[in-house]
Amino acid sequence: MKVIVTGGAGYIGSHTIIELVSSKFTPIIIDNLCNSNISNINGIKKITGKKIKWYNKDCCNKKDMYEIFETEKNISGIIHFAAYKSVEESTKNPKKYYDNNIGSLEILLDCMNKYKVNNLVFSSSCTVYGSPDKLPVDESAFFKKAESPYAETKQLCEKVLQESSINFVSLRYFNPIGAHGSGLIGDCSSDKPANLVPIICEVANGIRENLIINGNNYNTIDGTCVRDYINIIDLAESHVSALFYLLENNQNNFFNIGTGKGLSVLQAVDAFEKANKIKINFSIGNRRIGDVEEIYSDNKKVKKILNWEAKRSIKDAMKSAWKWQLNKNNLKNYS
Ligand SMILES: NC(=O)c1ccc[n+]([C@@H]2O[C@H](COP(=O)([O-])OP(=O)(O)OC[C@H]3O[C@@H](n4cnc5c(N)ncnc54)[C@H](O)[C@@H]3O)[C@@H](O)[C@H]2O)c1
Image (cartoon, rainbow, N blue to C red; front, side, top):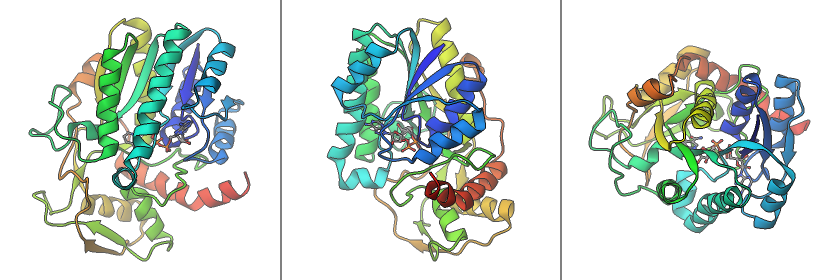
């Protein structure tokens, strides 16, 4: 079964392609590499032994998207990863985020309507909840005011989906970490990393002097922010479960994709140090605009309906994140 994967060369997309291939789907990538690198395309080929069809096109270009849909017949479903993802950058350049994140979805929905493709898995985020009143947060929680333009784009995209006639599942990811065990694919974001574990990895190999922890006066276990870190391979697998759900049910749905456990920044640093036997220098800095104090997922619904749950450890994710850090520049240079 053919599945179009926008943003399939990116961090989560590339890992999902591996899972799709092992579940006998035929993925087709649309990615203009605006926030990734061809090394992920090469890595996918090495891991799967298959050359995956790839359109190096912008999902916001309607003409190109029409051409792709015209060429590709019998598409069973679409997974839409293509978007910008930096909370911090979105506060500085909101228009870039509104244009790409909402614009790409609107064009995709237009193509789906025109070419009668009906199953969409959408990459949403736990940022849609803002600062939740109740923890763990479940899917019925009311959306609070978005803490950043990035979060606002995800809230708006979910609204656009609900108003559309498309059959969709929206996956609200918590915080993916780690990489494929081979060390051949991973997060290739071209910007300076803004997420905790890639920053820890840069400190570990000396690219940065130290990790600045943004605030230690939150009302949490040790004063640092708490997140639900999920192994990237578990996260990738959830997309296969979501696709099967869509193919079998004619029903829209929303699911949290997390482990159900919160980890503070200091606990995450400790987990990295123990997994890789490397000491991380850190200092305490100011709070960062757009950061929520504490969030972790209630995953009862996803367990019950998609029969999916996170199985892999944080330790393995910290090890694979470090392996990726050591490999990634060589892979990029030889692409
Ligand atoms: N990584 C996270 O922490 C996280 C958390 C929650 C939600 N998400 C969402 O998951 C999705 C994937 O995230 P990721 O971490 O893999 O990001 P990523 O930046 O690694 O991957 C996104 C991919 O989409 C491509 N892309 C972006 N805009 C495009 C466009 N207009 N046309 C063609 N290609 C385009 C990029 O080149 C990149 O390869 C995004 O929608 C993101 O908002 C990510």
